[in-house]
Image (cartoon, rainbow, N blue to C red; front, side):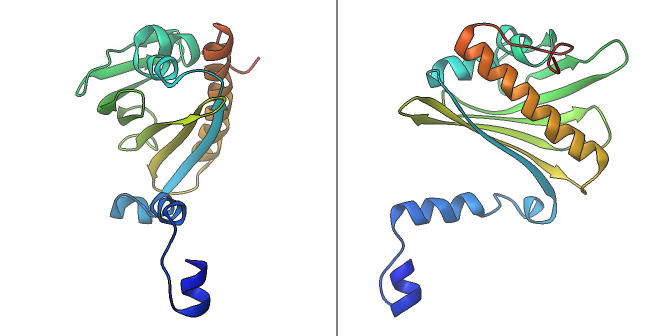
Length: 174
């Protein structure tokens, strides 16, 4: 691409093509809404990370202990955060060991309709998790709080996969 820009000849390298795809929204909705992004290396095989983000036991080990989930497309999972708040999230897509996509059906108003995508990429030291939480209408206090909390929960996920012990809600802020 550099040669194309400088000389008018040449074409993008495979790496440049992938970078361009990653920077391009998947849907028109993503082009007009806000997204939360996180990227982290987890020193574990993709199979173990996939299990941690798709099974009831895995999710309860890092996100919230009050989890009801099945790794099936169409399944509506329930995640409770204390006695007065819960989220219901539908499994939209499962590509074993590479991608998981959810859609929020119930929860805080800002969350409803948003999508959560977990992409798992192989790495020499384990697996890179690329996460994006798309469809936010605006940058709100809830958006900021959610982004911060995702970082804490992903720390919990990393610990669960690497040591066998995560810090799910309510202990994730410790």
